[in-house]
Amino acid sequence: MSFWKRFARNRQAVLGMFILALVILMALFAGAFYPDDPFRLAGKPLAPPGTSGFLLGSDSLGRDVASGIAHGAKTSIMIGLVATVAAVFIGVIFGALSGYYGGKIDDALMRVTEMFQTIPSFVFAILLVAIMKPSIESIVIAITVVSWPGVARLVRGEFLALKNREFVQACHTLGMGDIQIMLREILPNCVSPIIVVGSLMVATAILIESGLAFLGLGDPNIMSWGFQIGAGRTMLRSAWWVCTFPGIAILVTVLAINLVGEGLNDALNPRLRERQ
Amino acid sequence: MNRSTKILRYVLRRLMQGIPIIIAIIVLNFFLLNMAEGDAVDVLAGEAGSATPEYMAELRAKFGLDQPLPVQLMVYLKNVALLDLGYSFRHDMPVAQLILDRFWPTLLLMTCTILTAVGFGILLGLLAAINLNTWKDTAISIFALITYATPLFWVGLMMIVVFSINLGWFPTSGMENIAAFYEGWDRVWDIAHHLVLPTITLSLFYLALYTRMMRASMLEQYGQDYVVTAKAKGLTERRITFVHVLRNALLPVVTMAGVQVGALIGGSVIVESVFAWPGLGMLAFESLFARDLNLLLGIFMISSVLVVVVNLIVDVIYSFLDPRIEVA
Image 1: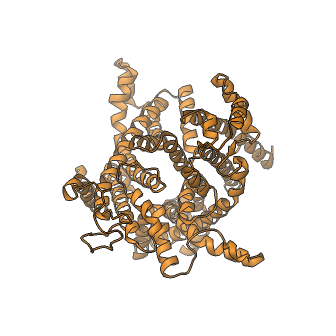
Image 2: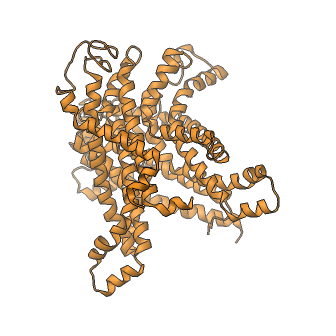
């Protein structure tokens, strides 16, 4: 059965894919629907949803909540993707070297990985952004630094399992170099678990980013969902909508990505599913 | 060698493994301190300019900032070993003292959260596994799926909107009503009343995690050979579930509770700053605003050490719970 057929068998995953597509479309066309800067004062402050021309109301400075959500989608998706790609890159290098060579290299690299896994990751991310000053780069770096160890462990496990298989031994006999074997022979065989873990990491990265922005560690020039909630929390008593809608946006996006991730897991590891 | 000496040796060995990690964390802290703008003393002074030049000069000498980097590192290690984490000018207190003061509220919140999350997680996971593929299982799975994807700070704010502002059942923030001067059991009751919303908020995410794990763990155990044996000798379904499967299914959940402590500390930064709970997380949030980087580093270090210690404790408890674990 083809990959897409297997993926489509899981209705939750298809629903997740559909929602995620909507969020991505929203991010792509944010500029078309709301051409103005989302930080711009668009009208009356604290207007309830549906009044004064605001679909989802306005905040204490008269900023359009709906516009903020549309532009915030761009920030969340972008940071989630870039940080995940970077973390997967680092994790694959660490895990591959560790699993392939074993011995002292493995010991040393795994000690480092272990230390990074011990450190409370969100507190570490806060600290890194605070030291580097909040900006889109520092946020991506911080999320990358706290997310790579999981990938490293996974890839190490896969490499350990694959390195003694016959096809790898055959490559040794043919005189292939280590790097060539790692990149062209072993790595393609562990792409599926990496894709599954990576897709779930995008969700975690979006949650970390929103948490940082909520605490005031977002890039001050870029609209994000966490920032909107952080800015609206003091007005919680009089204007519930400022915090509520961006939160729903985060929830729906993260949920959709998790559903897609689980669907990928089922579709890419069909044997695992049939066993259950 | 009998079992108790074996366990003692195991504890000692695990302790030895923890020490290099703690030293590595302190070294990491040192380099982070050096990464920040200005020298360490500028950071220590909280970038506030509130420190006197004499004190700054004294600090520079104390930290040996004219010395090469390795020497500075040794001095830093020595200071940390003596529990000297510097001085917070914002709070006019030594950092170590400040962290100790704020440690207990966080410990209270975290203990209640772990108990709630593990307790209800086990219960829900068990319910879902017993009623596999019925509406109960589906409802619990959907609940877990949604709470797993919800940002903690948003849950907290929504809790405040519903239960504090609209229903008026619980206070919006703080740990106790200081103006009321409660004593004895009244004070305990007051703190418990303030504790409800932060605990529920912080528990939700982990509750989802433990529910899913407990369900998977139960299902895995149902497939084991000993269940077939138990069925064959005519035990009731109820007895198999509660006496045999449940006990074995609990083990991975207990381990997970230890692993999640680091994440729990991160979550408590968020929850404490939402509910103004006066613990370490709130202190971290305040230090962000005051740009008191040294205080933030101190909190980071203490929480990392806490994770190492809790993992050690969980490993030891685990070796008591499951005699199959090889301790020697």
